[in-house]
Image: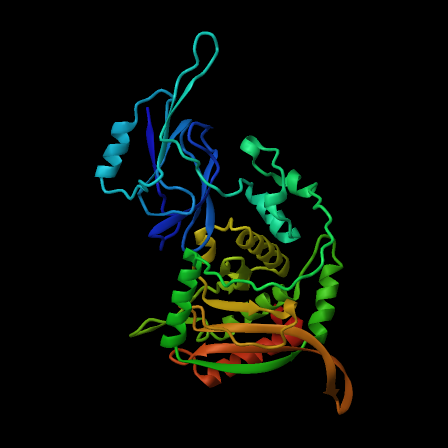
Length: 406
């Protein structure tokens, strides 16, 4: 019996989805659990699995097209099953089926002689895009390989990881001739639209102000080296800052708050959001209850969430519920910067690079390792004195790591 596959609601705020890639073509055999397509929501790109077994008979939304939640995405059924009525019923029900270029294929069953015939009806190519697995695309992007030059060895010429790994571009020596490069318009992704809307709202509704503080990271560096000397440990400075921030927030609950119009919500739990740059913009995975987690656990979770965000495999619930956000650009050599508050948080901490420079210690000039922290605050919920007290506590935590154990 044919089954209608509808556009899923992959996040709590999703209203429509963009099909970025189909993993199956009309006429292909589909098993339960197979990846049917990759769908871009307002938060991330997620793989969509089939819950049914059968033949992909119909595709309602082509690659590069958007459709609302519950629109007919595809139909899976028997190879010789009549699905015209089912498709018509879906269209009459108001589902946003992309009618232009829609394809359907009736597949004849295998004959007694063991030969199969295929009868195509208004069949058009599913896409002009290069067929490649998500991992192959990621490898190509990171290594600068042009997928258009790679010969795929997978089904239907699909490029897989091994094809990119063994690809060697042809060497060419040509004289450099400056040429005028035309400007181009780049389509705005759903994720970028959401980021733009939320940051604009935050910047123009929350009265931002900024506080800066310098932190001596000598003791934190020594403590980190001692931890990393343990078997299997690999703690970053960002992990140390997340832990210290969570512990400081426990002492200053006014900073761990949200503006709610007639009230200010002081959150009981401390959930640290960490800004992660991805190809399509910025995502904020959340480490839940960071104040109760050890450094090694925070390190493992941070690495896992960052990797999921960068490979667009992160789930919606892993990006919700933050009560305070940290943005770190130190790895890019940025010494200090300001950030826009990630609402409904009241504050966001901007972390710069640890810089080696002369400092005065006990009246003597010495070489020090200094970190600049800049915190953006919502003046509706956090006053200047409150924010300053929090930063002083955070400074103490970082300069005296044992304070985190008290």
